[in-house]
Length: 185
Image 1 (tube, rainbow, N blue to C red):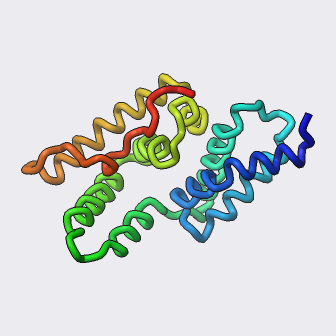
Image 2 (spheres, rainbow, N blue to C red; image 1 turned 180 degrees about the vertical axis):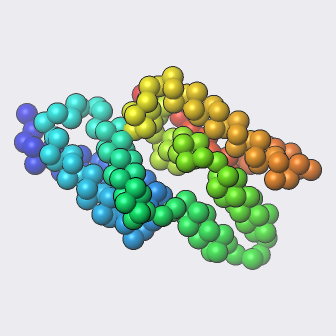
């Protein structure tokens, strides 16, 4: 049997980068490290009760709760807009006008969606969580998450189309937030 220190080291090594990316998306670069620290402190305190194979979902769920707690305290800001704006600002001018316009359009559509819709779309696609992991991270059942994701996709498509009704509502690969994996692990 592995020592608690060894298990924690493995847990951190396997998941810290993903938890940090999630935290950076939710609260920005300045606070992401603090969120990761709180998440892994909570993991250390709960290590004995963490079931093998469920650690990733538990870590993302804990990260989500830490972020929500910080937001309620007024300490968080929208990192998604920051991230997409940074992509927009870094885009070279030569031949990238269409990509920049699409990125801006996706950002605007995501900003129109509720936090719940935005999170359902982004958590699975950008952070590569399976539907089961995403459901656990959001604190809902797998079927509830599937319904939320379906409805969020529908609202995203409708809002995307409303922004430019003269253009098709289809998005190029990678522009539309879709889960990386549809199946459960």
